[in-house]
Length: 409
Length: 175
Image (tube, each protein chain N blue to C red):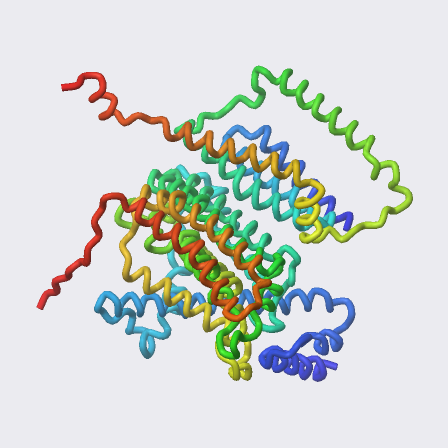
């Protein structure tokens, strides 16, 4: 009996790793009836709870190393070969640190904020299709669920900032909320373009739509259409802002307000905030991969033998590396610049992008020779001209010339 | 299922009562957010995922945020409020009127009377909701869109009307 369960467990893992459908069926059949439902649920949850925090540990090392190289230094290299054990050392440090609560703090809310924050960030992974048969829930309203869950993290940041009774914390929380509310709109609008074309709110349907190749070699990902490219860029900018990362890290700008809403947190609670921030970044990048970069589909024909979840993780890490690169390159924006950029530039452009997507949708019937080219041009013009016009209009009289750099010899 | 319903309902009611009776305004706002979440859970339990998630997105993601922002911007040191406001009689009267109207509307609607014959439940998919919104309910949808646009433009105009002090000074004493 036990032997059978163990055997079917390994069969299940093998099936899941080899991308086969219904991996857990046999394993569940071998179990007694009474615990089947709960084990089935656990089998969906545990990989998320283990996999993404592991990825988080790897990413912190990657980020520190990458930033180190960009800033012409070595980065962590003391713990293990290439500093590979640095995340473990960081984790131990976080756990053993003293947990300090300010005397005037609202103790209950101060405690609840990091705990409540982790729940929605973990929940967000429930609808993201990681591989061909690896999606925890194929929800009819998957993307709506994602945005609803994402919106509820804003309140916890407010809770953290307000309960600390510290002016820097409160300022950070106000900045964070203003920023997240502003950038949520272009984030949602840029993904609405994809929903319009696909005609479904289910993330599994969106990935299936992007299956196959045009002319046999260009993947049918939405990023290879004009509205998709514009949407993808706007989505990534808004995603950067939503995950409070540089250059949009004014909520925790260390040179201005210490660490914003994190100022009064230490030890494990701080670690929870840190974890939630990175998990949020993974979740939103995963959504970006699903919407624009073809989800788990291979980028070239003939590469289908590679398991699909590896493609997904690869694309996800590509976006994360892009974020690290941006963090190492761009300076922080000012608050007014940040909000102006969201409301005056991103919002109108994301609305116009919807028109571009609509033009693409209604020109789908043009099947004459070169029709696809005309279609492509039309959609590109609809989004391209407003971009140039708006950009010039907002720049005003400012002359932007090539900058010259002088390096120390 | 009844156990889940009991837990959700108790959570919603308790947090709604707490939202009315706590002394600290921010605590009240947070309790209100919990009550919104409880309502969303009730919608989900009734098999209406769209309504449930829209409730979370709009009420927890926007309305609750708006409330805490308003509290933060209007009062700096969060003074403790008396539990009963002086105009509580008016409040009770308004609440009673709303309750009577809602109760009357619900009791006179058709599902209540046909409850015995187990009405067939159409699957409320997102697609069906979208189709209904774009065909049968297009006029209310457009009216609402117009209203929201007008409100947005109004908000922008109110926010814009802020003469720069330097400009105003220059106009008063041209030198």
